[in-house]
Image: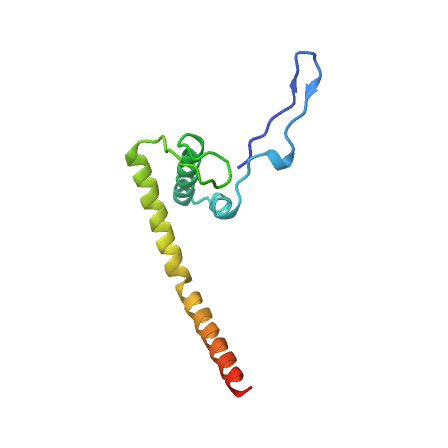
Length: 124
């Protein structure tokens, strides 16, 4: 998805430059794939997720600053915050379950390496 702007005239009559390609909104990643595939349901789901996140940042009080120890006050209705947090929790749970086999495999390999190191140290 791109938003194209045409050059506009300034009050002095000189054309105003259009934004660079880097500053134009584009859809990439899963949203770009869903758009390319014409998957409207997935586009809606992903768009809703992005919309909720932006709303927390722009209107909700999170802002764009780096992490801080200061208290942050969220300025959105409680139900909207709860809905967003529940969705985030579902996403995290799904990601954990998706990554669990890989993690367990890596953990088993890590445990074998530690055991081998310990065995080598005992012989030295």
